[in-house]
Image (cartoon, rainbow over all chains, first blue to last red; front, side):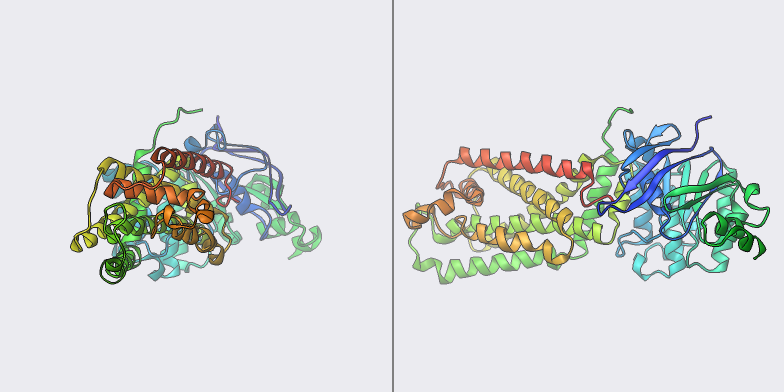
Length: 247
Length: 258
């Protein structure tokens, strides 16, 4: 079966010589809920940026459902929805404009765009806020707009870069339910998060990246013998094996 | 690879998005150049103009109006594309387009379309103001439209290059302050090349802005001070060179991608 995401020997070196990703290879099976963990600066966001076109890979190959993300980038982009860590939006645009414009970029017709935007704004309780400029929304509402924007074109692979950072408990729980529904309906999800509880609850497969390399990768069960936190701390070298296990 | 087809809806969305942004700041985008042009027209029409002899059989205000129009078209084009792209980079919402199935040509064409819309609207407003002073005339409409569109495209492309290069707001204004404004003023806006001392005429003939002003002036009042063929050739060559340069910068992701 064609993987939802296949990354082979990805390397990303920034202009000043910083090696952000160093020979990273991994695959995500279609329909998987994949947790991508690592400390700050480990290369998670850079990997995501290479997959989505925000960064140019230095070398290596990336395929989205078998489509080359560099050579056939337009076709590959159609398959991906991205909810980035930072709010990369026009702060003066309204919530509805942000969501609908993204649908337009993906070539959706006006009627289809409106129907889907209505559905997502309703789903994320944004209908009453749809005419407000983004900059006037609270942090939680902003996060919902970003999620709605990522989902407007109904992507087959949804990439969520710390989607629950800074949101309240209610929204986090609601979002978890929604993501589980999406995943049940067939959407492959790649999630990065610093909340290990979130990853433990949602993901079936986990990879840990450290200093630009995958240091541990496998089904969630492989990480759970001593607990995900201990496995994470050991894999990233933050704590030696025996201390992490005892914590 | 999938055959390339044009994402018309994506292109139209870029145009709608950028147009909605200029409509948020109408005073800055439209009213400011119209008032500036009104002041130029008033001064040259009623204060300075009557004391200057006709040029090629045209009143001084008729002679200078195409130059005033060209100055505003150049400014509008450069400011539109440079500020649009720079703000998208600065606030990172350029990433919305980067993650979408849009080709580089569609992104560039979308930005340039709005540059042209802004320039045409600016030009129309100035023509209406000039009409109130009884000086608006179009000698050759296709030629007039050619110059508005070509000059808007040239400075729209230059604005994109500067916006991709600039690391801060200070750098964004460098080209405008040190090149565009001086070259416009010595580019025959207020005088013919023959009014310059012979040893200074190279400043006109060696200045591409001179041919833009001259071309627009010919399309409006039929007066020309230089070879129009040379002007058209220089302008189209600039469009082609800048167009390829901008496409290449998008292709390699200069200033756009990490």
